[in-house]
Image (tube, rainbow, N blue to C red; front, top):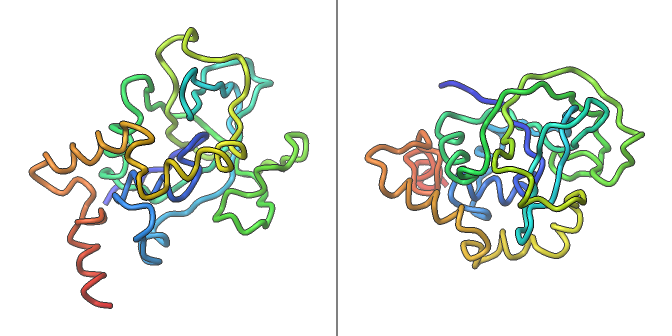
Length: 205
């Protein structure tokens, strides 16, 4: 089964939101499912992260080489996961290949995200990895001038996205659910909330 590596810089840095998109659930995720993904902190050069006006999520746009964006590098994603992510991100973003640098982990126990509060100048860059990233393509008018803050999102918005009524937070969740329901085949390769692999795991408990 093909494996993809993606760099996330916004709401998808939060494991519950990533799990909700690719597996259909933010809470009922097994250790076996989690082990299929390898999550590391990383940094992307030559892009700028901006707030999207009237939204909880950010965008990135190309910028000069001195500009960087910190995020998470996730490997082990399947074709089905990418299919779901494409639907979730929508038409304002285009998936592109980039090269990111893995960062030394801060050891804070936050599931591979490193210490996201560390200062930019304290980043210790390691190996360069090719990854896919969702780049904003809908022009700069909808974007605010300031940087999007992940810590602020987690504190003030996260519960709306990962809670019981998370579907109300963003239409993207419903778009993914509807597309999966309408598909004649299981695009997740059996790994989704209603997939063959998930059902087999639950039956074996």
